[in-house]
Image (cartoon, rainbow, N blue to C red):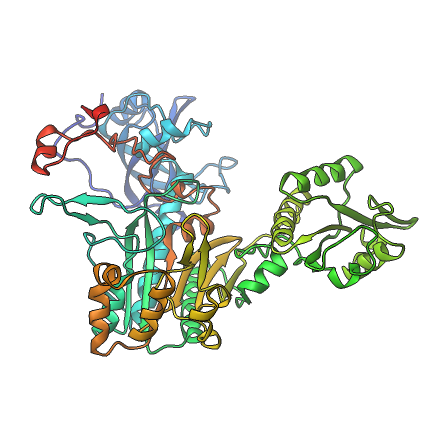
Amino acid sequence: MSDSKAGAAWGPERSHYCGEVGESLVGSAVTVAGWVHRRRDHGGLVFIDLRDRTGLVQVVVSPEAALAFGTAEAVRPEWVVAATGTVADRPAGMANPELPTGMVEVRAAALHVWSRSETPPVSPASGAEVDERLRLKHRYLDLRRPELLKNFVLRDQVVYAVRRWMHDHGFLDVETPVLGRSTPEGARDFLVPSRVQPGRVYALPQSPQVWKQLLMVGGLDRYYQIVKVFRDEALRSDRQPEFTQIDIETSFLSQAQILALVEDMVRSVFREALQVELAPWPQLTYAEALAQYGSDKPDLRAGPPLVDLTAVARGAAAIAQSNEDRWVGIAATPAALSRRQLDALVERAQAIGAPGLFWIRPTADGIRTNAGRALAEGTVAAMAEAAGIQAADSGLLLVLAGPAPEVHRQAGVLRLELADQLGHVAPGFHFLWVTDFPLFEWSAEEQRWTSAHHPFTMPHPDDRSLVASHPGQARSQAYDVVLNGVELASGSLRIYDPELQAEVFGVLGLSRDEVDAKFGYLLDAFRYGPPPHGGIALGLDRLVMLMAGADSLRDVIAFPKTHTGSDLVMGSPALADPGQWAELRLSPWEDDR
C-alpha cells in the first residue's frame, strides 16, 4: 500500500517546506512533508495538495511510479505524508497564479505515509463555518487552518521584532516572579494556596508592576519582559483570563521621552512584520478625547471629530436649556440616508439615553430637518454652516443636546455607528496617545476615592496641590496607546517620593497598617534612593489581533479559553483530587464532592 510502512521508525528527510517550492527549484529533487489538504484523481494521475505551515504545494503522482501511485490512491485528507520527487513547471493552462507555489508541481517518485487520520471534526480544507466550541475543543485541528495559522506566523514576527528593537535600545529582558501577592490592578486575582504554609495564598500577577519598580530601585534602568499575566474578570472578545504583555519600565526618562521610545518601537514592529509605515501619532488629553470623540479610546477611522455647537445654539434655542448643557454635532459627508433610516437614528439616540436627536440636511431646495419649531429661525442653517455641511456635499448633521459628559458619550456612540452604517470607516492603522487622565475616580459603591490607574501613578506637575484638597480635579501623568478605537497600552510615570506616596494613600483612605501590609516592601525599598521612573504595558495579544485583522483574541492565542473561562481541550478548570485538597488543608464546595 505504501512505499514504506506507516509507523516505521523514520522516513525520508524533508529538504524543503511546501511554501518554499518555487520556480527557482525547477529541475531539482526535493522532499516535502505535511498533511494531505486535498486529493484529486484525474485521468490516471493523482494530484495531492500537500500542506505545512508555510503553505501548499501540488504533488503529482503518475502510474509510472507504481508504488507511489498505489499509496496516492489510498491516502485521504489529513494523512501525514512525505513526497520525494522533481520540481517541474506546471503544464500550460494549469498554473495557479493565486497560489505562491502555483507555477510548479512536485512530480513524485516516492510517497511515504507517516500516519493516517480519521475524518476530522474540524476540516482545515473545507472552508465551512464550524461551531466555535467544536473548534476550541479540537484546537490542534483548528490550528492547521491556513487562515488561523498565519496569525501565529505574524505573532512570531512581532515578538522577534520587539525583542530585536529592545536589545538594540539597551533594554534588559528580566523575568519576574509568577507566584507573588495581591496588587491593586482593578480585577480579581487568581489565588494559589500554599501547601507548606497552610492558610496562605500566592496571587498570580495581574501585571509585574511592583516587581519592575523594584528593578528600577535595583539600577536596571531599562527593563522589558514579554510576560503572561492573569486577571479573573468578565470575558469578551478582547479579554482572556490569561494574556501576554510587552512590559516596559525605564528610569531617568520624562513622559515625552517614554512616549517617543514606545512609538518608535511600535513603528519599527509594523515596518518589520507588515511592511507598513505608520504615520506619526497624534496626542489628545483625556478631556480633549471626551469632548472631540466622546470616548477615551477614540477611533480616528470613523470620520471627523464631534462639532461643538454650544455657542451657536445658546440663546437661540426655542426649547428650554440649562446653562450646563452642551450642544454636539456629528457631521457626515456624503450621507444619503432615507427618512426611515433617519428616524431609526432618532430612536437609537433615545435608546442610549439621549432625550432626542435633531437631523439637519442641506439640499438644493433648502434645509431639511426634523427640528420643526424647536430651534429658532436661522439656528439650523448656522449649525450646518458651523459644521461645514453643504448641500453640494450631500452632507448630514446630527445634533444632540444635554449635560456633559453624557451628551459627549452619546454622540461618540452615534458617531461610530453612523460611520459604520455609511461605510465611512477608513482602512489602515490609526494610532494616538491619550494623556492627562484623572488621578482619582469616585466610587459610589465604596463611597471613597479610588485610583484611576493605580496608586503609584505620579500626579500631573500642575495639579500637585490638588491631590489632597480637590482629588477629583487632579490629573495624572498617565497615558494610553489607542489603536482603531481599542486601548492597546497603558502606562504612567511613577511616584518615587515617599511623602507624596503617603499623601495619595491618604486620599484613598488607606490606614498606615493597611499600607504597611500591602505595600510595605515597596515603601521600604524607596527609603534607599529610588530613581524617577515610569513605564507602560502593551497588550501583545490585542496588538497581533489588530495587525492580523482578526475578530477576537481567541484567533491569536494558541489555546484560548471560552467566555466562561473554560479550556475545552484539556477540560479545565477541573475537579481536584481529594488528596490534593487534603494536602492544602482545604475542602471543596459541596457541589464538587
